[in-house]
Image (cartoon, rainbow, N blue to C red; front, top):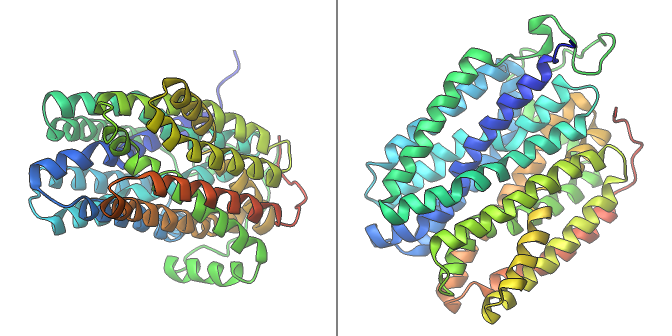
Length: 417
């Protein structure tokens, strides 16, 4: 019987780690109304806390990538999961808006950074020579899996008991994941005497990153990247990607549905339904990114996403279940499908050694967009007493992103399939 390559075990550990970190981040949509009701905080203040977290975990991405190069993958995953545990435990004791911003903005923002920014890229680049696109697709799809399995459960716990019960469930899962990482995770194939999956002989590795200050390293590569036009086009399109996904849908979708009389559990279930299709769409996107022009993949992803976002307000206003299902399917297929082609293009332009940190900077732009939408959505709700214009604006921005990616110069594919 052929032995399973350890790279797949590492991918599995990373997959479930991202699920846990992803459900922490995506659970913010479930907690907005309970926090508003219990503490009497303004929705824009609650949105600000979640916006700070979205921005901070994105901004810290390139530095986390540099720290992985210096400290190792396992140690960084342990530190990050421990930080999430601390943030979740402190949530029980908060009673002031500044504490919400500190806990969910800073502590949980930093704790989720490793898992939700550069882990997929690092595992795919270091542990896989073949099937890199597929590996990235599977790992990025894992955030949707967390929503698929847990968001309705969290919503039920909030509705029947309290938000503290939902936090307890996430806390237990985070602790279990920390133990698994401590026991089974490994830093690199070399540590256990094997080659990356699909590699037949070891290639000489650059030592340019060894023993360097991670902050200096991150800024050196940023200085190199900003001289390249494609970096700005990727960063600009990814800003809009973040704005139109985790920032808007991830933070405000449930509240938007509640404003039209849809119960919280039904709204969370609809988000999970999107998660089913995102799991499918992102995995397929990873497979496609190994085989087709990644620019055109991104072009169509952004066009379809924009169309679905413009459709949503009409679906809610009409109270049409059929339109809501159409939105959920199209949006779900596309939610994180942009990640594998974006990583693939950045790897082709900047090379395997540098692409992890440079993608971290591109992802920082993604989270800047997410932060703008997370806060902007709450701000626009306070002005218009509706989210409608926030969603229509996001759809228009997606059309702009489709134009950005098609301007990227076609790269020679260097991916092993």
